[in-house]
Length: 379
Image (cartoon, rainbow, N blue to C red):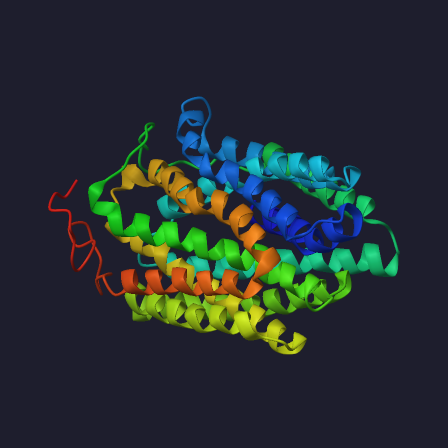
């Protein structure tokens, strides 16, 4: 399932900036609005826990994956502002529900000691899937010279066929712990919630404006953007398993500190970069640093009650997207007058995350969620 999601979403993401600029004449304002709308389903991810009252997690994941494939498959048929907004929301509903359930199942099925290494390998598989997606862009758009509409339709259709095969032939996996079927907000998870919030805020600037800068400021073509994404995922394919093992050995605290120090430097550099090759290098390093976010997931796994995982993943996705819904549209307007200011705001978010990372214990566990807490109660 992760392979299919990564392949289909990678194609959508790689083509997006070129497609919206070439076919719908998007500016920073429109791309900001589109990305804000894309994050609305993520903001509503807490509703996943209510859907689980009706269907099992594995069925929910497959259904969500099918919605993602359909949304991507029809994108090329609607090359206008409203059409792109609507297809993006449909795709995003599938994407965010799938990611919510995927994280929940991973944390339930994988032992705490093995989780960092497993997540590193899973990230490598995501990268391999993305490489397949980018290879298909080269084959269909560069070699066969077909239009965007064919590219989107083919990749969405292939993904949908693979979802059908999984639904029919894959076994149903047992769930170890019965999950709570209601919303849960634990006071003792406060540090995880804050880390999640700033992660969402910071990631939006990378997802929306770093890639947009490559096309608008440096004039990257579809093939050049695809090549940049290929480099990103080759690097992740090679190094993600090592990052997972590093987190398992060095601990979540050290991994998060390294990630956030790196992101402070990267975002500050984005503000001043004037060379296309240096910008591409920053983009690749930025993407690699986000692999360190595995540490945030394994930190939560170590402090959480097993029965809380599904509900908390739903809530955490909503927290992650509180800023994500607002930031793209507001910063899209700011982008029109000062792209540099947008990246300085990203630096500020990274500094907030860094301050929080210093409060993560070296050995987190239930009852040892933070070195210092303003909340005296455990629950």
